[in-house]
Image 1: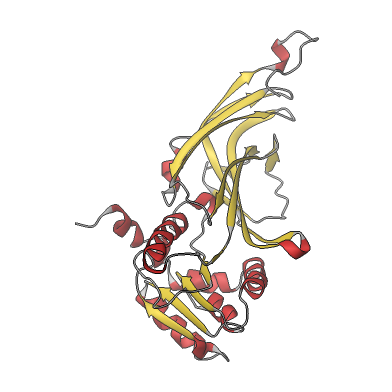
Image 2: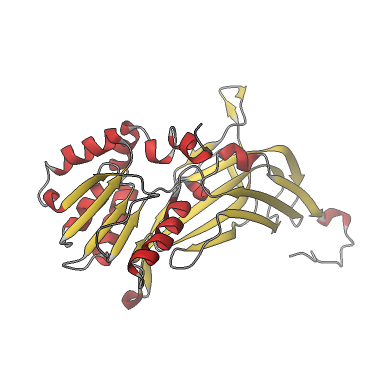
Length: 307
């Protein structure tokens, strides 16, 4: 009998279809950000480990400076694909593609940098947090400190109330939507500013579940029928430039089961909970939104006490 992680691995995370990995190669936002961060984090002569290597492209970026790169991949189809592609590229011979489970693998020697991109919006579906926490514990037991540099170094997650259009040529369908960043969608109206609900620092111990309750001051009249989830990955911190190299996942818009009509100045309370690596429906079933304060019902001299 398979356990929950093994069942999920059959269709998520470590067993993402090959063609999906090919699409990631064409994602310029992802590729450019990771290339820049890896170029900064990997020093000449470094030893590097990638957990969940996919096509091997991030390991190949590291091979430009590293002496040795261990690229771990659990999906046998991707192992073959990575080996084939690396053989076509200069310095690809520096990368050793290893067929192994990232939950169990440790390198034969200490490494300087660990790359892991098992990232979905909100740390859902894929096993980024769980894999890194397992690795840190096992690595410390075998090699002691210090821990390697992790890439990404941190993740900032936020949520935002929306009025979202769910009409598709007259067909009403309140579905999960993924939106490109930096693109204006006519059917999406932001009703309040985003609020950060979790910050993950991979150098520190991290919880494997998230529970949040927060408030928003509504900035315009509308019907709150969805929540947008935002995930910003801090791939590398560059202290000498007082800056970071970031990668922003596509936004994820989840419809609310019970929409809330609100006016400017109202205060909305939102709550949800889910575990890292859990399914999107597991988060959806916990989404709650309700008005705590209705500005129109208050005396004109009173302000929004929750603002």
